[in-house]
Image (cartoon, rainbow, N blue to C red; front, side, top):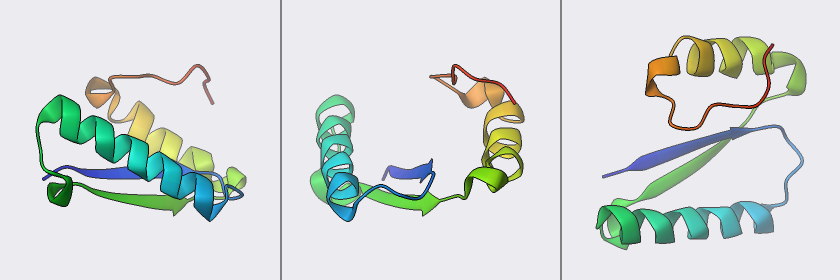
Length: 75
């Protein structure tokens, strides 16, 4: 039962979010072998000034051992 959380800055259209959710769902079902009904995806918009404290520190720096794709930036 994978649940994918995507944190991003505000400003992307609902259409783009739906397209991304569909693409991720397709890849999860294909690669991991889960059924479409097992996958859930959410988007959490984070304001740019809040990114460091709400995403970068808790989800990237403090969970570095969990990252499979590290960002190309540092803060």
